[in-house]
Structure formats: C-alpha cells, structure tokens
Length: 632
Image (cartoon, rainbow, N blue to C red; front, side, top):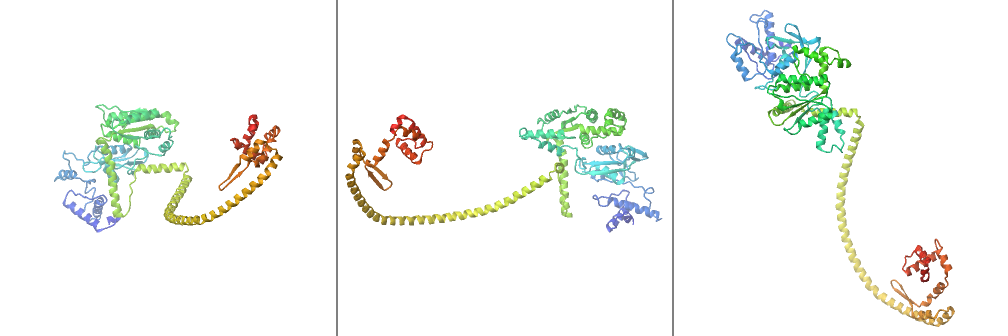
C-alpha cells in the first residue's frame, strides 16, 4: 500500500528488502543499507517508516510511530572502510552515538563543503527557527559548475557533492556549530555538467577568429607572428582570459606584459612573502576589484603557479572566472567596507540607471570587474600541481568513455564525448555565418565542390580510356612499322628492276637524240657562216666585236640535262640597244616611282650582274651615281 501511495511499482524484491530491514532493525540497534546509486536504499527505509506509522495509526499492536515515538538517525552518503570502522566503534551498549573524542556530531568538517554551504547561506535570511529563505523575498538559483572538479578524498568520494545531494534529497543540512537542521527553502538547483560557462580560460569565440582572419601575409607570415596575433585577440575581447603553459624562462610573463602594454592594460601581480596566506590573498583581490571595478581600468591579473602557497587560491581564481564573485570576500562585519566601495560607484550607477541599493551596487561592481579584468595564469608542465589539474580532466574523460562503451553494450545507444572548445568553435562559426550571410556562398562552394568531384570522376574514367588507347596505338605503331619496312623493301626491289630496264632504253634514246642534235648544229653553223658577213655589214658591228663574236661563244646551261653554246652574235641587238641609251633615258628610268614590269626585270638582272641587291631601290641608287652609269 505504501509503495502504491508513493507511485512505485510493487515487486517481490522490494517487498522482501523492506521486510529484511524490519527484521534487522528489531534485532540490531544499527543497520546498514549498502548498494549502488538507484538500488532503492532510500525507498526501502522510507517505505518501512511509512508502513510502521500507518500500522500504528490503525491501532495495530507492536508498531511504533516513527518520529516522535521512535526516532531514527539516518546517515546517507558514501561508505568506506574508515567510515564503517568508526561506526562500529562509536556504537556502544547504551545506544548513544558518540565519537572517539566524546563529541556527538555525525557531520565531519571539510574545507570545500564548508565553502559551498557558506556561499549558499550567505544569500539567505532566517524567517523562523531553523528555516531560511533567499534574502529580499527573492528566489535563489544555484549553479553547480563542473561537478568533476571537487577533490576526491582517500576513498574516492567528493564531500561537496555529497553535501549538495543530501540537501536535494532531504531539503536541509546541519548547522556546523549547533548541529541542528537548517532548512533552505524556495531555491532551485541547476547542474551544469562538464563545461565551463562562457568566461573561462582559453575561451575561443567568433571575435577571436574574426581578428585572426584580418591577419595580413606581409606582417603575420610565421608561426610566431600568428601566435602573437592570437594572444592580442584573446586580450582584446571582453572577459578574455588565458592559460599559458611553459617551463620557467620561456617568456610567458614577458609576452603577457608586452600584450598588456599593446592593449593599454594595467598589470596587477601579487607579492608573495613567507606570511602570505589566504587572508593576504583576499586583500589583494579587494585591491584588484577596486582597480578594475571602481576605477574602471582594464586590468590584467598576471598569476604564476609558483605563487600558489595555498590551494584555496585556485578556488578563488576559479570563482572569479566563473561568476566574478569570490564568496565571502567581504564578511558580514565588513559590510560597511562594501558600502564605502559601492558609494564610489554611485555616480556611474546613476548614468547606467542602476538602483542604488547595496545588492544592486555590489552586482554592478562585479559586472564592471568582469568586463575589465583579464586573468593570465602561467603554469609550468613540470610539477605536481599541473599533473593534479590535468589528471582530473583525464580521469573524467576516461570514466565517461568507459560508461559510454558500457551504455552502448547494454542499451544499444551511443553517447558521444565531444570537447567543449570544439562545440564552442562550431557555435561561433554558426553565429559568424549567420551574421555575414554565408548561405549563398556556401551554396556556391557546395556546387563548385560537386562539379569538381564530378569532373574528377570523369577525368579518372577518361584517363583509363586514354591508357587503353595508348596501348592500342603502340600496337598499331608496331604493325605499321612492320608494314612500312616490308613496303620499303619491296619498293627498293621494284625501283632496282625498273632502273635496270630503263637504263637500256634511255641510252638508246639519248644516243639517237645526240646524233640528231649534232646534225642540226652542223646545219645551223653552215647557215650561220653563210649569213654572217651580210649581217655584219648591215649592223656595222665594230671589228673587235666581230672577233669576239667568232672567238667567244656564250654557253648557257639549262639544268639538269641540256647545255647550249651560242655565239655572241645573237646578243648584237642587245648591244645596239644599249649603245642607243643616253642621259635623258637614264633620268627617265630613275624618275619612275614604280617602273613597268619589264624595266624592273631588266634592272634586277643588271643589279645581279653588278653583284648588287636586285631591288628597284638599289637600282635607282646606282642610276643616281655618275660613276656607275658607265658600268650599267
């Protein structure tokens, strides 16, 4: 019945466990329920509590009402060997739970869980006895960032998380001084797993990439140049912080100081002495808050891992990075100091239309600090601190990977572990693409890539065809060479046979033509001898020319077969025409801009005989020289 009232399924296993707990409780003063998370430990004892109370109200004998008749003390949390041993040693026969030192408190003190409880309680105010509500009638929203970060104790549990789980399950925790329950009402808890919200070390967003895209190849052409530009852009963006990892002397602080100088930032550093502890560090943080929040000066907080003399320093820096607020930086008795700081902000707050209440002014101060502050944490990869920090993330990633594999085997579902910075990069790119309307360009790029891919496939297919064609061409070439060799051989044989047959025929024909030409030449000479005296008389050829005519025949060679020999008598008309030329004729010929074709041909021949260039321009030049006219 009680299981159904709690909207739980009634199973034999659950009923058996409730009965076993009842029997164990009756025989032993202390009982222990051990099991994994979700194995119904809390359901078992709560069901038994409700059943006993219901039976008592019905008047059933032998059943007591739990609270107030029968009081139970429930310890809910992780179990380890030391805890079991302590429980066995403190339970004595008089049924009084006592510690070894004689005190009666079950909750141990732990530094980090103390801080969490103090942070939440600082935002509440007391309404009734043991009941606390958020201050000012508001509701409280608690953000738990990076649940894997709290340090594990000797047995693997995380006390801060156990405290929060206890609060979620039961709605209260214990006053650490009075050991009485303290109920915190009207609050909500939202867990943020595995990621650091927005303003964290090494935050990559679209502003950084926009700055890098403005790099010019003439100035940022090396890896070192791009690195310096990246550092500058991280500093330039709002709430940008950095983690620099390198051995001592590698230039981490020098590079950071130079970047701060370029960006015109104030550089703030702490000075660690032998007595420097948490209180001194908090005082320096107050100075830092006044510089960045009240004076409104962009400030770089340069912090080195060698300055961490107390691990609480890291917790404070993590709080500054996550929310900007260091819990309990200003204690209740120092609230006047907060007001003094806030009064200096009144003038700026009025301009920004901020309500001048202590809470509003303090929130305004924190926002100005976050906007002006840039934290640069320089850490060496050598040493226990870096290994401790790195091991937290490695262990967490490995455990998630193992559980994901188990989930895939048991539930057939995949769980993908994606680095946060990659998701932030994708998110930043999506914002950049939306603001710059890259959809059309992306579509063009996609179409272009598709065409390139299609073309590549076609080229590959054509390449295969080409290789096959090359093989065929080589084969055809071999065949052609064989055919050509055979043809040349056959042609040579045919030419030889034809040459032999033609030589005999040509010899006979040439002999006959030679005899015929010889006869014709003898007849022509006889006729010439008869006509020559009369021709000489008619032309009045000078005596020396006559002798030249008889003695100096001119031979013409008509390539390639015929040779003609003519007496100079045939050139007598040309000589007479040449003798008839006078100065006037020379002037007329020279005046031609473009002479008749025959005149130009004659002058080309004359220039050739003179060994000059056979052109009309050269002929006119030679005609213009008096000394050359005689030669011409």
